[in-house]
Length: 543
Figure 1 (cartoon, one colour):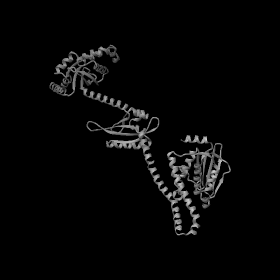
Figure 2 (cartoon, rainbow, N blue to C red; figure 1 turned 60 degrees about the vertical axis):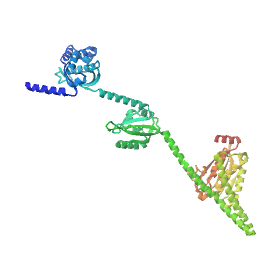
Figure 3 (tube, rainbow, N blue to C red; figure 1 turned 180 degrees about the horizontal axis):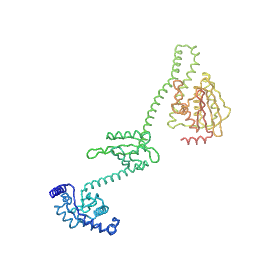
Figure 4 (cartoon, helix red, strand yellow; figure 1 turned 120 degrees about the horizontal axis):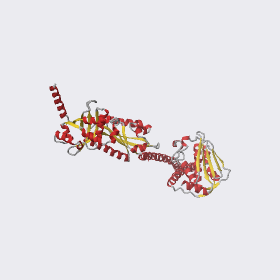
């Protein structure tokens, strides 16, 4: 038996001294006896009793006898030999156990009192060289019955604690920076779940931390953008690649704002993927500016298209009256050169009528172009004078009598009421002429009706035809430049007549509108203020 015990002791010493971690074997016999005395005296709540008798903890600590320590303890405490460590501890444990670790010994006393067998906690020691170190202390009792022997393991965690503290400080600095950054910042783990959102995210979206973390941030993304955004993010997460995407993000007031979300993957010291760190920036103003720029470019393109189309139409329209005019002049010149007097006299009236009609048409086209230039430059000038509206309409209708008879389109006028006001005669004649010309063109073969009247504040005149009518979708645009309700191939024109007419009427303080049923004609009605003061007030309001 003696040989077996000796071999066992040798094996124990080999393991004890060969361990890399600090090992202490302590005798708690005196401490256990002191606790037994307290129990016998009636103490039931040791924690409360110790709080009332703080000196007992230090006294109990001094009763602990350190039986042995290993070589790792010598190195940990920066001693020269084991004997130096044991001698120091036997003289005064307070040289190693600084005041703060007394809390640790309090926990050891409570363990013994409650019959526990294992305790693990972080504490602080002072080496024999005076340096303070952080350690992880593990206290183990062989059994509940044997409280006289206790084994203590000490593992220095100073570096780990410093690293943890540095990491905590770094995270605190990052959070402080992120929470005060002008952008929204976020961090994810390797699975793609969001583990951090900056304060600016919560202030912008109104989400709480519980709502935003994980994949909850997607709930703040516009429903039409959410699925696509999630797919882009998860795809990039699977590839470990940077990404950038635009989506509409709901602000806490309910308005969706355009945002740009961009991120880069995070990698550890060993190259392991850790997740993403990214930022979200509100780009609504920039997006709106881009959309406005695109709209303007589409409009710099539409304007060019309209200009080219107008130039093509204008070229065609200007050539149309010039061609028959040129032919008639050539015919007359040839007849004159050949001295065909009787034939020339016979056909001259008809030829002159054709030429006059074409010259009138040419003059009208050139006049419209000039009017558009004046209107666009803001140089449309009015000369107001007393005008009899009924008489003016009658005069304009008389000028179209020849065309009316030639096309079989009778003009029927109801002009019994005398209506006088302060207007620009030339602009008013042009407005009536344009409307009557259109009525004869689009209502050819059917009567055209003219009417004049007045209300308490306005004079009005209307031109109604019984022709093809205006499609509903065209009613709102026919008063714009270069617009027409039908193809210019069939009816010609520059698409300026109604535009010039509306500008003339509005310049005199009036309004013009149209009512039409497709296939049943159209009625244009212009309303004009009768008094000069009303005209001036309307013009000032328009300007």
